[in-house]
Length: 177
Image (cartoon, rainbow, N blue to C red):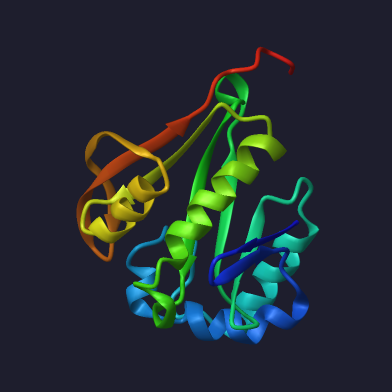
């Protein structure tokens, strides 16, 4: 998969991405706004493991955000199962050097369109920590709507936090699987 967007490109992960991935991901401010499965500190070994795992997955659901020729973040979907099989959770992060440039909004907007088509989805949602209003604004600018506050739904960095649930939907095409 390769998608050209304003200021960046979404593409498959490559082995050569590991050094830039570890450099951008090894940032406490990034880590504070992602799930705990995202390691901190983020070592070169962590990056090498992630790149090999993401590149080998079928279907491929996790992609690099390339800015200025290097992997500077990631975006992907976590496909749901059973009765939620037409839904997916989107996740994304961007290296702090590229914050506040509209890149995250372009990524979420472009990747959401791609994911709806590629995975035959009717709903894509995101769960944002309440202490991260910037991510909520990214989602809103990309067409997501706030559906609700999940009170005391997460623990991050030793604090119990509310989550904000955002989603976007499209017309359902009918049960095909």
